[in-house]
Length: 418
Image 1 (cartoon, rainbow, N blue to C red):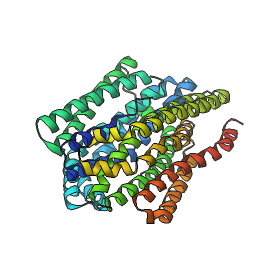
Image 2 (spheres, rainbow, N blue to C red; image 1 turned 135 degrees about the vertical axis):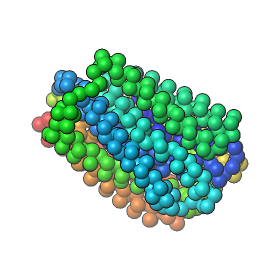
Image 3 (tube, rainbow, N blue to C red; image 1 turned 90 degrees about the vertical axis):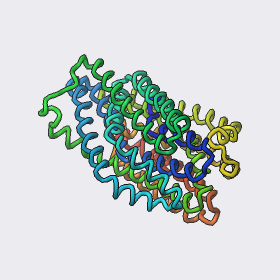
């Protein structure tokens, strides 16, 4: 469950380290840039999600050749997309940072972080593929081991470069590159061992037309779905930035609470992807339905625990993440809203995993776009409440995501299994 940590946690560690410097501008800059990378790389999260689904389905169907082909096929796509992101880094940085609407100081700090960390793009995307492949093969413990190593390296490198060598926000970006490179090397070695050294496949297998067309269709729909989800979080961050550096920094601290919740709930979604994908490949309706119930039950169990921790210990966590008294004060004003998020997000994350595992990508895409509309409508109606209205709209988005998929699920189950 904890294997889905790498990219967001790199931003959290950077936020905490830079936050200890006590400069709200630097904290806002690394927070803005971290959100941009979370969203930018998240846009290509289909590499992880589809790899989990297709790998689990191949495992359920007993297709050994396809199990071996999925990893190198994903590496090829990762290299192409990552290379394009590096080539387009200048217009990307200009467009994204302008859209965020931060102050000159925050934008300048964010640009420094962006222009360094963008070079990790091919590695990040390849690590998505490795993670998805391991989870899809029901090797979650190995995936977790790789992620623990990545995050341990990231934390050590960040502390060294930011707080010891005093490289500031640039040091946090270099630490992220070091961590991603380490993850790729370790993950590839693990995959090499699992396959007995058979990582390469003939081009005819990798480029088989029917499989590629199906994969492209699923990836397209997941990408559109992810873009709609990213749009909601970018809008949330941009509105916070327009409220001033202090509100942006406070929201950035609180956003880490959402990320922590996502680690657990999205970890369960990963389990749903694997279990449902495997049952789908084996055409096992009973196993599929059992997996859905199990993930939802465990989701609410973790959500209750997280909401309790946030309600009782949230102030202490805020103090750990920033030393600025003003940021601490503003963040506490919205803590009660953050404490509600895990409970309201269970269905959203659980059914994400179910829909991905069954490759119900088109329905997932359409429902996510509708959820975005609900979020924007809620913000428009609540905008007079300022940052409180913004947080309430985000909670509405959580409810819409989960509720719409829950309503659609029975019909899709009947269509798929009869």
